[in-house]
Picture (tube, rainbow, N blue to C red):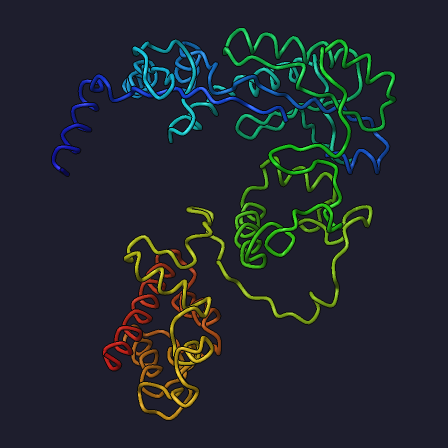
Length: 453
């Protein structure tokens, strides 16, 4: 099977042709059932928001336009031929009472559910970005300025097929928005559903907003409204803002989930000061010694002082301008088998079946809590991997072998951070030490299992 698959892929890469029938699908007819404003409010500046709704976005992408975009983005000719073969040779048939009709070719569109389709749609949507940048550069459209001392202009936000256009209150802005969207529709095939799109105003009278909406042939919306699944203009400090699932905030492990997501942004704030996100925050809150002010220029950002004063700071990741930061890089090492990384992940979350955890789950009697090394202590993850006289001594031997300082951290997460940083700040050294730490964890756990079974 492996040989057949590899030969098929190699043949496709060589000849840019797919086997007939490989791109055939069915269409099942299913009946459907009908079913930056905070800053503007505070500063009393007018803000015009237009939420674009594309009609059957994926189904209407023009293939010629998509190929032209890839050409302008300098994609190789061979790559464009591969994409054309994957997209343009698709056929489909309609299921009528469970029976398929004759196959017929498609003339446009991307099929939802294919891994390649979101990537191709992003390239198709790049046209709006180019249009908006062009009319802003030529002073045909005025975006919304965030900040006062060094304002940053924002004219559009895009996430997949969710597009939000924004600017100041002016008739010229309204006319140019419609012109851009109509022109983009003619070029790309992405039809804008103006009746479902909506115009929202901040510090703008209802009468003016109604006239602007009639020019755009859209409806007038109100704050809050949904953009990419999030209520724009809602107050996240209120419980009613969040869905009442998984601890009210919509995620199961809130602390870990939030820490992981913020990690990438912390890195970007350190090394990508030319990025739009940093410029927006700097324009709104101000800079102090090259970093964002703690309380903001207007004092609108509150920081819990006690939480900062009594907490010791430590590096979880040392800055590396060359390769950057990834959330998964904390324990998921590219040269380590997946089973080792999963074991480490479970260890740091205290999910390994140590005797303490098994007793907690009523799997073992309370009297069976002693460490498998017969040291007489209670077998917890902390004890087994760090403080056990038998297993814990591994760290001293390893540190002596590689010539690094002995780590004295009392928690597993701190031990991982300190151990990986003990050989220096270079990325290669940290990667090597991380590899050793993961290997030691695997050795300790397998030895513990061998003694039990």
